Image (cartoon, rainbow, N blue to C red; front, side, top):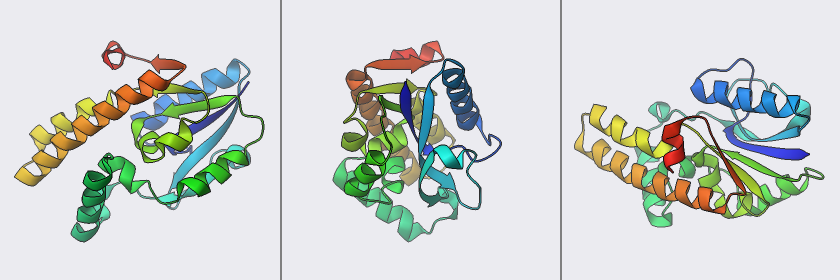
Amino acid sequence: MHLIFASSIVPCGEPKNDFDIVNRAIVEAMQRAGTRVTFIGFKWSGTELEYPENTVCLGDIDPAVINESVFQKAKWLATAVKDRLTYASVKLRAMSDTDLEQALAAIEEADGVLLTGAALAGAYEETLSAKPYIYFAHNLEHSSSPVRSNETRGAFEKITDRREAKQVEKLERRLVAGARFTITLADEDRAV
């Protein structure tokens, strides 16, 4: 079996956070079971790909918004509201659907896609869900925005975090509904 592992951040050396650690564990389990894995997604700026021979890199990104200008953040938010996307997904819309389709077409003989996390899947939902896919629901992403909202001081951030939580929950439900299989690691993730 050959799966395309679609993730906002592809493996780039040692795992940097929980997302990377969980993704690595899933990939290693699939590889031990004999699954061929080709990665597609973005890489952290300034890093090297861990599996360059099995990775289609869509470009370099810095997913942290703290380094972005207020103007850029406002532009992303306006696009998210206009296009009914998550804020996180808008940040990943660095290429057209046609360009992504061409990148996917270059991956030969793939049996399906493993969508890990909602951000990239939401940025290119139609394109990435065109093949049969498995959705890897972890960290119940829509639950983290209200938590962040309670920790945020400004009223604007609270409003945008609540909006993001609602959009991510809708996206996660669509991804689960369309998936051939959904993988979860925790009981909380099964709630979607």
